[in-house]
Image (tube, rainbow, N blue to C red; front, side, top):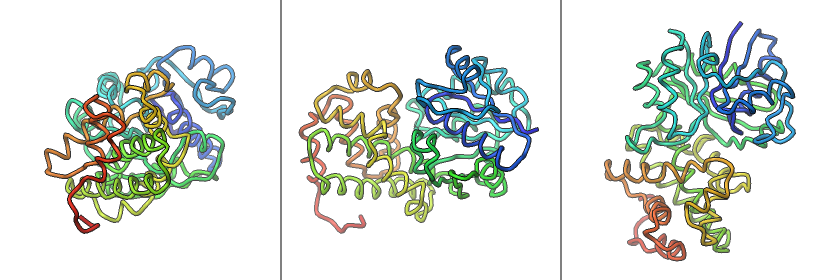
Length: 339
């Protein structure tokens, strides 16, 4: 039997556990899926009623999913460990993971963020803390709004790993009738795309909050993709990744959907709420608010211009009044579109 541990019982962790369980039931392979929940009452609810109402409302989780609030128990014996905790708390959980990790376990990151203290991508944090090679680290990213997937609305995603056969193994574990994974070896590009789109979605949300129209939002999305591509290719990512699911696909979904936490947070900012007030109104983490400063710092280190991200971070830090954001986005020197 293959044991899969999913660490993090928020909306995406719980939904991905459902994806894995439904894939196992479809394939007929013997698989157990165990969710780690930080709160014991969430684990108890999943075990007793097969629901996680806080995050997935009335979605019924497959019976092969069990839950625990004991992190060591979840990791012990797991062949695949899926990480779905907030980016800024990942490192603090990895010491327990390290103590209980099988020597050949595969690590899968669902996390779209940069660590603020180091500017490291999540795959880099995992490699550093667990002393594992890139061939054991997989990144899953794409247009994956959790509630739509929990409702089994069809979607596609990217499973990225430097070793293609490992990406293919993880893709097989999550392939079912409503979730279609595609493999990729561009881990850098896939991760950066997933990270920066959250900051761009904040900018689009701010446009919403200020009652700006579709032209403004389309301009931010398009120029935001250009910013993302510049940074990722500077770091070694491949250009073609950004016309695919992890690039354009994820960006459009996150910027366009009212289900997007980052767009919702941006809308609150545009309406005049402070970053702290917007955070209080959200039930889950808007990762762009946490990782934005790290994105801008990483870009600065590599000499990459990211005016949209820089402006959003200035708003978050209270250095730029939100009503000045739209004018600032257009106040650049004239240049060719591709630059």
